[in-house]
Length: 490
Ligand code: GLU
Image (tube, rainbow, N blue to C red):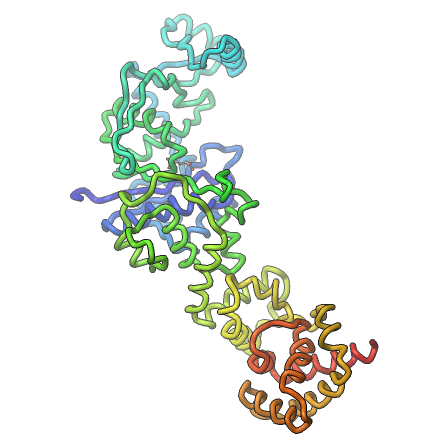
């Protein structure tokens, strides 16, 4: 490619960053990085009622978390700013007036109520509604009369006759009959631009070369192409990428696992796993066996031609599997930080708990648990005992393990044995317990099972000796004592 590739991600800040949006951003980012291009972030916030600053922040945070850093846009600036549409209203007005002057746009004084009434009438006749061009040929005097009535005009783009064709990088030629399009509003009566219009003005002024976006926009594209032609702007190339749906092929929603990027961050998924998963969702790499792609491999191998056209299906189990692969390879130090963020967010620790010892403890917990979990927060769901002394005893474990006759004696013996044991590491603990069991003519399992229930409340978990080491002597002794108390109380 000769000219510098310039792509953009253009979210509307009306909520969190959706997985579908994240994948659109990812494909744009990968495409820009692959061709040494520029990745622009533009905030499409002309819907003042629905856009919020909070949502802008969530979107920026989500992109940063995924590592999809933009070269131009909010906070970093750039030569084609501002990058918030709400700060570009003067440009939309200026460009709309150009079309008006050229006779390619016209003022429309129809009120929403009038339009609604006419539309209902047409639909009642079994026909489909398009704007009926009532205002196309108004005389200057008629326009003036409307103004005097206090009506403010919207501007409509006049759709020419014929057909409109654009090349989609996934689909080849896509042709629309212009008769399917109506004279759409470009500037509303309150002076705000509509999406199609602002998008074209911005993509042109920002020198965007490739528009990569969700295929839910495919029907907008002919309208946009006609605007490029009306302005005499060079038309970018288009790639409409498929939607991400749930397993039941409906729009992705909470039922399928959360659709929001921050949810995954907050649950302790790793951003590189998310990026890998999202990249693989509609990208047929040609190597079906290979699932794990680093960021560099994605950049190097990514190609729009390999993006499939059918909708992608979000599969939480597969994401979990993939995240597990990344967790097992991750540095426990980093996982400890993620864990601490989760503990903080869930109110399970406060600033004063965050000592170097606590950090070291979390690191040991993660080293022990990272190959048993699929996302970091799962520890709190399945092994909360690492972070509370008020863990509950699984009733079934109490019944089948703790109520064995010899258990109080075994726990008392273990307490005495472990109290003076040094160093308190898995190997030393294992040796001591096995030797003690043998001395008493018992099986090692007769110590192992009750000890596990005593310190965790559960029958299953990581290897007992490693678990005791990670919990540390103080916790282990306190928990054995607590369990003895529990058994005495019956
Ligand atoms: N703001 C639009 C959206 O979020 C952008 C679509 C586009 O990329 O043109 O759907």
